[in-house]
Length: 317
Image (cartoon, rainbow, N blue to C red; front, top):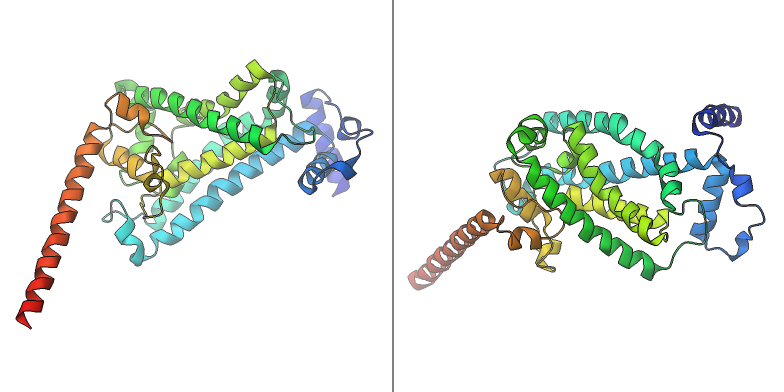
């Protein structure tokens, strides 16, 4: 294992320009003053020796584990008939063939589009002044407000770009692939044309870089937490399910699957990712509002009919 790792490091160092080894980066560091997670962070970089490799491997593995790990519960839920009452489009349930076809394209995009981006992540971070290997980590307060800002920035970017993607040629040649499933499911979050993966991905990673460019005060741990939350949001928004505990029932401005599922069903409107305000302010949720209002009215009528039947049965007794 050690000989393989040394050979691998030598190959990568020849490509990346011999970056500063971890033994030099952490020279004189007193790890006893660090938290357990910070000590693990140092050990990770020391294990790989090369910070470019350490950051690249961690970034890619984290993305794959979170994306597919978060998709698995939705695959299980799709196989449970008892969960159909919570499905937004109950007539359409993805088959095993759908799941496998989607997985193949997603993996292809991950290895051909996202992997090169992730591989160059460390040098780009260093260029923009983003802290990578360094410890200690930033405070929880600092990470919280930065991640909240990323959600707002990415949501605006996604609204604008996603709406443009529905323009004639862009839709026909790029975005149409993502709309192959009018009833989306978790794995389909990144089922898209490679160019779309690249363009929309710029909103996710571009927000941290933009903040770092102006402040020079951002740690990659904050970026990782942001990416994990963003992946959860993307997969959940494509899940096709709306539960009573879904976040939008507690935060009315949160989009969620209820909002994005309509976009796939109607092909137009509800362009945002995380929040509802841009669609509401710019009038691109009017169809959604009408549809949900009609569905609510039908549900109320059904409940009223059931109550009438129940009352009639009591009188008959």
